[in-house]
Length: 596
Ligand code: ATP
Ligand code: MG
Picture (cartoon, rainbow, N blue to C red):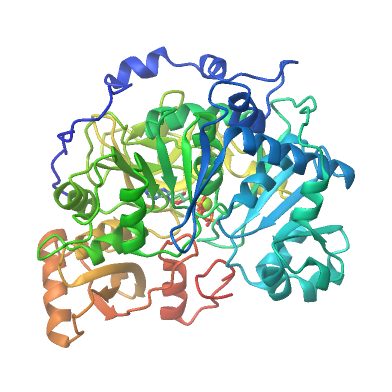
């Protein structure tokens, strides 16, 4: 697609840390990145120490670590010193329960201050934290509690009643259920989180923790199938810290806000850990997803860096079109905001241009996975942006593009893989293992883990192109890519083209098997408010896409669908669109939004 580079015309409020890409990469080593952290007195490394205790012991102790914005917009700050005390109490409470090194503590909570206490308290005492997305239904909750060997669950009375109580007998390993808020007394087999925490002592010495100790268990989004539990260790914090400096430009004075639910890897790595290691103030939004509310929080809290997802940006775009009267952002003072970063699915170039034109802000896409544990490829905070590009590998990250076979995955011959030759050639994105937040296994699934590596590379399952200048362009997930009349078509490119039409809010594109072409491209389109579907509009959109993409790539068929299926983390679920279209089994739907 022919998008210009967006030069960083909005002057950064502070000196950029990184201006020369190559210089930063060549100066960087992970060992040096490790030196930016404090480490435990005995030389070990513990995430909670880097995120809380070391600030609590410094002149940052009285500074707000959390800024909780309630549903009613009431604001409550929790200082680093207070967070250190709360997490110490929870670590002591867990110790009293006999929970310690390697034990799994699950959280099933919305965004609330207790979540931060539970996460960081667990890490302090050497336990392994596994966060759930609070909207999960009883089946996925039970499945993951069992798969993850849960010993402790921290949740609310309402969530416990709805999602766990009836399954408790089937989970003998789940010894302790701690209830946040009222209601513990009425629920057999539970205890009150607050009572336990307030009865505990508020100082705690973190036990020796080695960098390779298991710290976090993250289930992937399940976009393509059964959820996998990715294992991460304490030294991941080195990568969280370093990448947040490069990709998110985090600084100690920042008010930082990440909209991702803490149940997903983004909400944990960059919603809890990374900003606290930088001594920033983290906005904890306890309200619902709503464009007006978002603008209000960005303005009133003077947020300086906002980390969000394409789906959220598309919501803002719908609420604030490029043309016409738009009072939403104008009604708020967004002058503290340096930039917006986006992750989770491809960021349509349209959204980047919208950000520049409507908000006057750069929008930086970045790419990573549950497995990688940290941002890998990014449009750097201090550099120009290529709308539609994922960006370039961060310092410490070695990436390549591998030739693929008929299955769309890297072709492996005698254990060897071959990089593509020319710039612009599509292939599977692969990464050289060795960065600190690299996943150390899929829990209880060694085979699947082993299958993720070949020829000394980790195979990501995503198809990309790399330009001669080293920028990466997302093509699609290997299992989403459409082969039509000898072409490989990435659904994202087609969806992005459709979204440039003013009538289109969102699109999901699949391949429908066809005797002649192998597959034909079919688009499912949701329309902007006020636009009515019609045969005429369908013809217009098909013609529009053909002019943009050419007849080989443009969709041949189109359906209007105001409720495109999406994962709870906001990604369009193409595999479900395809399964419905072809009458195939729909597979694991535990992460489908609205399925609870
Ligand atoms: P599963 O592995 O269970 O199918 P998932 O891959 O969706 O689920 P995550 O680890 O949450 O689970 O998501 C990582 C994937 O999201 C990436 O592999 C990629 O396909 C997609 N993704 C993330 N960021 C971007 C981005 N900036 N551009 C394009 N795709 C992205
Ligand atoms: Mg994946």
